[in-house]
Figure 1 (cartoon, rainbow, N blue to C red):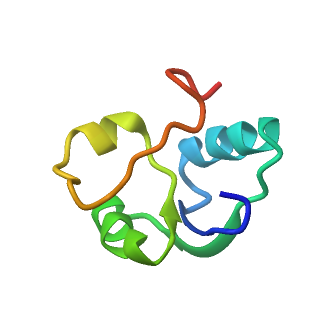
Figure 2: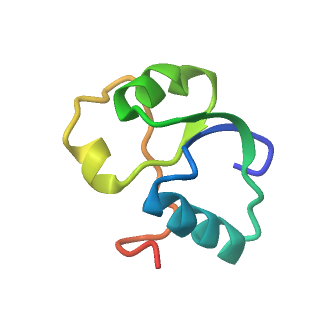
Length: 77
């Protein structure tokens, strides 16, 4: 993940703070290429990078062609 381009949620989302904190705990500095407010659009863009999304969002969709990795286990805090 260190060198991967990432697609992140926009700054207005409370989740972005949790994502940044989880990355910092793992010494990962997100290489932001795009910020977006639309989860489905992020999923469409993920073929070109990495998207950080809540597990619930991933679980609610059929993502057979994508790999989902856990950044922080069950709790991003």
